[in-house]
Length: 396
Image 1 (cartoon, rainbow, N blue to C red):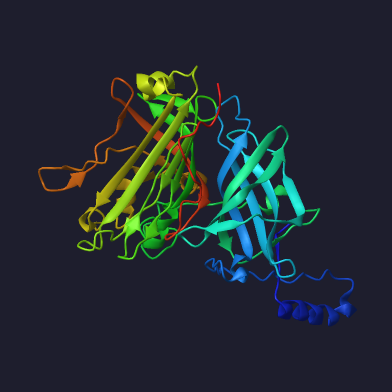
Image 2: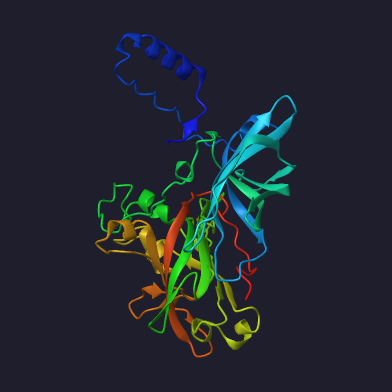
């Protein structure tokens, strides 16, 4: 069943007219009208309550108790916010389902609207902090939603018949095999390359040629969240967790002297299971003694010559280790990427070209690469779609 969107009055009137004119065709099924949708996403204004109407996704979640095994808690969710003029409050309802490495949670709906606590609008004008988190019970686990990011101005109509498939949207990255620079699905185009921006989960880690699996050996995530600054800047933040997370947030033109420079902060976070051999390959002794968590925050700076060649802006992503797949399997190459962590100190070749050296891990300088799965898209000028900190994903 497709999501039904609250439609303007004129659509309802048009529907009535069409159905009235088709009374004589009772033996034929009348196709329902196509729901009215808009991609409009009005920035939030604390003084204009109507700007809050729309659907949102959780951007900061905590849970209790923590799982006993490696897991990333990502909620496939739609949360509506409706400004209630009668009570002068912001009301909300929701439909959510946890998406884990190999398991899903219950599909949970709360159709009646409830009152949302006081909110604070963050700097991107699309994200809000909630004074008292939304609590959602899923079996023995409680999800606490502390922060929401507005997706657009539409509200999604939940009914008793609504199922998980109605709220789950498939997100895709660009396709490296499409060379056309005017095709939005091509990684060679600017719009295509921008599809790398968003939230990923770390599915697999290869460390010294041994392969380790997310949900068994570790947990991890990544978020790419570029923002366009006052000086036409492109900034990226990356986080990868083991549970595995990664956050990426580029900005273009941070330095007024060099308006085309690309600044890409990358935060990498990984929590490793205590009984996995990955622990000795990926973590130093100190990291093993502090919860088996690897956490780093690196900022990369690229000048326009680093991404103005044949690859275009895509070169900025591949330069810092975000690598599109060229496999013949279309589903894989449009839903996954490889990540090769880099050191943030640029090295110059003899011919004047530059590169970022591979990052090494553990006590003995081991090499590691990661396979990331795309979970949620984002855009420039917004905070990361998921907030990643250095708290553990699971308890041993």
